[in-house]
Length: 173
Image (cartoon, one colour):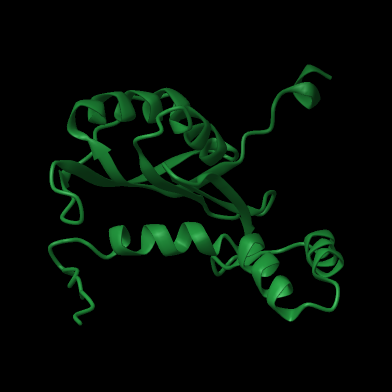
């Protein structure tokens, strides 16, 4: 009987993208992620070209199902960070993605096996109810449900590596 009551451990994996962190915070981010995973971790930090003086890292993790939530929670209190945590789906659990920016806070979404954001029926019905017959408001509500503001803010940081330089365009005149 004791075996039946023991915790079922499902292996999971995912990625932590720290898009921007002050240099002094980097070891604390590693410590927090390691504590969430139950093991010491070391990230390969590099300069963040979008904001000089900030650092970025990408870390592929393995742990129990739910580890992504623990990592995102461990990093939640540091408002200076921009990060994303993904957890791939497993046979016993859905996939998930957390995004954080200093201006917007945390966004959470369930994901499917292809990594697409899954918006539930209740959320879509809510958007339709709030929007009424206003298509602009429906568009706004659906963008919010999909986390579009977070994607928009993080996109330059995602592509700002040595292999994908960002070219900033400025309107003239």
